[in-house]
Amino acid sequence: MSADRVERLIISYEATTPSVFSLRDATRGLCEIIWMIDLSEPGMTNSARLLSRVGRVVDVSDLTEDQMVEALRAQRPTGMVALNDRRLIRLAAIGAGLGLTFHSPEVAGRLADKLRQRQTMQVAGVPVPPFWEVPAGLSETEADRLAQSVLLPAVLKPRSGDGSRNVHHVHTTDQLVALLARSTEPDGWILEGYLESAGRPVSRFSDVVSVESFVRDGTVEHLAVTGRFRFAEPFRETGSVLPSDLSPSDTQAACELATAAVTALGIQWGCQHTELKFTPDGPAVVEVNGRVGGGVPELMTLAGGDVSLYRVAVELALGMVPSVHLPLMFPRVAYRRIATPPVTAHRVISMAGQELLQEVPGVDEITINRVPGDLVDWRLGLGDFIYSAFGSAGDYDEVEQRCALIDRTVEIGYESEAYAPSAR
Image (cartoon, one colour):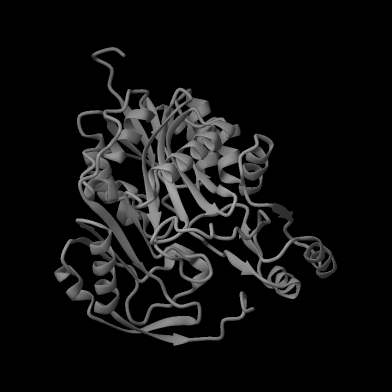
């Protein structure tokens, strides 16, 4: 790399993109930022004003992919990073057009399409749940025929999407037919067999973990394993803990499976977030995300891992060797506690105690996402959480105690409606 070369990084910015200031800090001394935004999206005009203070802004609304490539080429980018899933395929096409280090369009297609992802891993011998394609627009007769041919219980989810959006736990054929009749997904659905829990002590929290990794020129390195708190019905996250409390042997098994999954998908560069579940037959892959895991950089910082995961992602996007020394050591245990509305909730009608969260020992950062009067819908998944709290503790016992205190501190009242879509 030339000493006088100016690095310029494309970051696709939208509502779910991490903090502007966190990303600014991650790029400091490395590169300039090119914010790719769509001004037609709600609230983006106000965001653009802030973004323009810390980088260049390129509006791609109403542009074709070829026009996006040319608009961005004029800014002379040298790298591009993905921080969420929604535009992954578009970003891969742009990256290919600009000759940047990024997921190839083929790899991005596997990452964005849950069906293609499972098919690819299954062919490679990577353990995944049994699965069935559910095309969009099935007639009632076709849906009934499909329902009679699959194994239940199962999990119905969109082929594209994240954050547990519109994910259902299916117990009966009648329920599956009714769900397909009531709900639409433009890209269709995937139905996955429900993975039973391990049946042995794996974690005091849950049997689901994620492996946080990075890939450089096809070589996979693991940074940490993140544990999960027990999920809210049907499959919504209530928080995470880093590092996980898995045994050394289970940690090794999780990392080996993550390597196999990432390799099978053909991923060559970038940060990866691989979700696994421990079953009676060992760990199985739930999903691979070709990006930094949500909330994981904050957890690594709070756990004292002496690494900025956002900076690692930036360095990889620019073709640099990541400034991280492995294995990471974590002197503390970090957690994120997330409050989700009940599946029967329709609206928040009251909330008390949220101002006291800052007084809970170890709490570092609080986000209030919904307030009294706001509508809520469990089908939106993680995007419709009420509040979250990041913090750290000295050990796992202390994590449990502090999360229980967080739960008791905030009292939330809801207006309810019948919960039909996943009723048993």
